Length: 401
Image 1 (cartoon, rainbow, N blue to C red):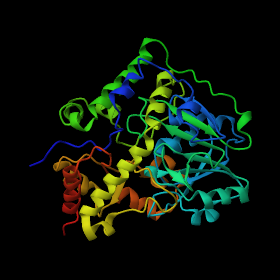
Image 2: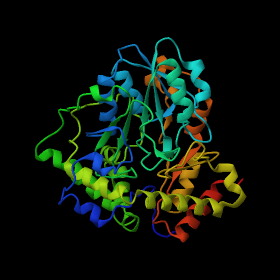
Image 3: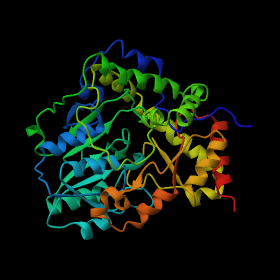
Image 4: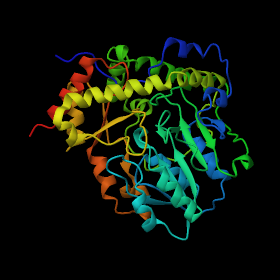
């Protein structure tokens, strides 16, 4: 018998977090982050993509400059680069961490290379020691995509301040969820010369619809409510209102995507207060996620060696996203969902093989393999022992000959 339906992600918000909407309180990100990104400028943005856009707009870059980045990535990030006239140069990933492999950087760099964009995929810390050394030797900018990485540590320090800039994202599928919003971190020697980014974002009563929709989405994603609220609603939309389903829970690559700086509501003061409240218990949240992941792993026995990644290879992962490697992630997803286990396959793609980036195609076999084999499964503190057992049982079923 299938128990409660498990969402694939839960930010673990409390009712006190939601009260921040009514009592904005702190409105400064520096205070919200409580010194975790010391000696960096923290600038609010409507989304993480807005943070990247703002950095590219003011950085010493010009059309035709090359940006080195992992091929296994989120396609809209690459599309932002292309939209600004920059050239994506795809680099393969480490199979153990799903992050950019520094061994491949020298062969992919050229005289036109100007920046490395490194993604801490699934909250796994990338090899910043070697990547930053490579950037220093070549006089390249370094930008960190920390959308998955609040609470991820490298040498005991929050990632995001090693390079010249970084983005953070606070959407409903993130470990810090403020119903939207993002953050640009500036840490390089030229950080002070960056102007505070200004966006012509949506305003007026219509702009309130976005955070309200994310509020309902976040409440509906609460593990105890998900199976009775959001899950049946999404299934209804998928069968009757597919366009709305794609808006609420996007799954497909959109080759025509273009970033619209004015397409989102602004960062609001209550978002900083929501972040502050969650950052105050971030270590407990990370510890709970890591414990849940270890609970699932221990129940897999020796089979864990076959499917488990190595997220702590270059630091400490925050376990915000838990990925496993299966022979067929699509079939694994089907079997997991049949057991009431929320999951997602092909969430991130080998961008070096996508049609919209055909002009910059590259051979990145580990990225191709990750796209086919990686399945994201639940890993949050409120998973009970029986939940962990059910997830492990579903995964073992996918490994049956």
